[in-house]
Length: 192
Image 1 (spheres, rainbow, N blue to C red):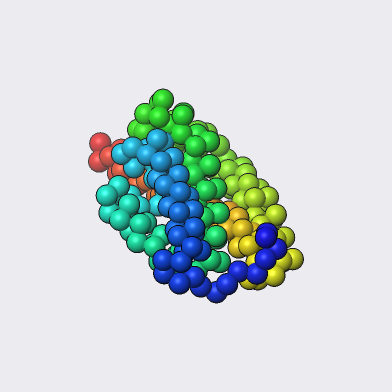
Image 2 (image 1 turned 90 degrees about the vertical axis):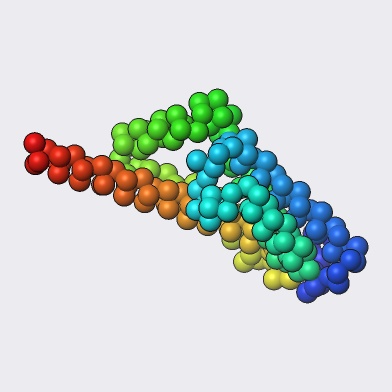
């Protein structure tokens, strides 16, 4: 079954469609649950669109996407794989975020970033994402492009890309905030 070639689409209300819909709802639900546990107020949410949509609109958009993606098995498996890996990533530090509180965790993280050479952080991030993407890339390279294994591999590579993109985006936002703070301090010192 794992090496089987996937059909291009499943008709609405077919057994395959409902199976994929159930799996998509589970995967997206785990992503939502892990995010809710880690950052109930979305203070630590890395995706600006998800933060802007909030819980209610985010849930509705994800529900609509699950119903749409269930038509296409390859896409559904890619989304499920990436979503479950994102949820696992969220659960990894959710206990710490929740026990410290969202604002305290963010402040603690910003302090750690300020005390870490940017090159070390970027090298660590690139090492994490490259080593995560590598087995996924092997599946994509060596498996038939219509197979379940290919879709899982693509989902793993997608997850690595998600981590790299949103972590880099957060780093860029933190750096911009620090530059603005420094500019304010310099301006205040000049005005004194």
